Length: 92
Image 1 (cartoon, rainbow, N blue to C red):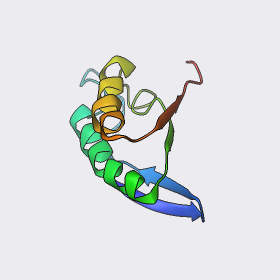
Image 2: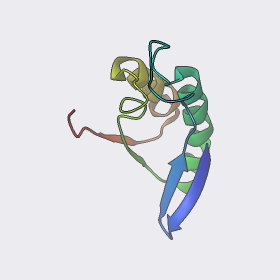
Image 3: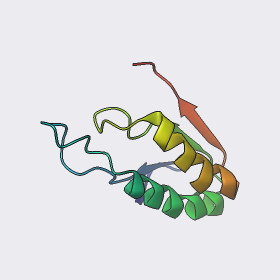
Image 4: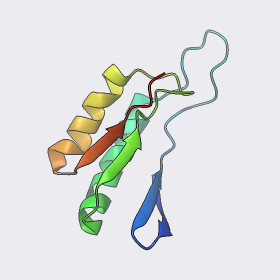
């Protein structure tokens, strides 16, 4: 996870949480453990910056993940640590 400042009050968290691309029957490229690791690393930085997290349903698009598995990670790694989170759902 790496934070990049794009405006004085806006940061973007880049997270590497997939292996490869969706092809064949090898399963989706999402790595839930990597999502958890990235969110765990993000939490203290967000709190330090006194910021909030705004995000789509990460890991659930091209990475092929399921929100039913990602949401508990967001809850345990961010919400449980006091990080305020807004998830934007753009539909399918």
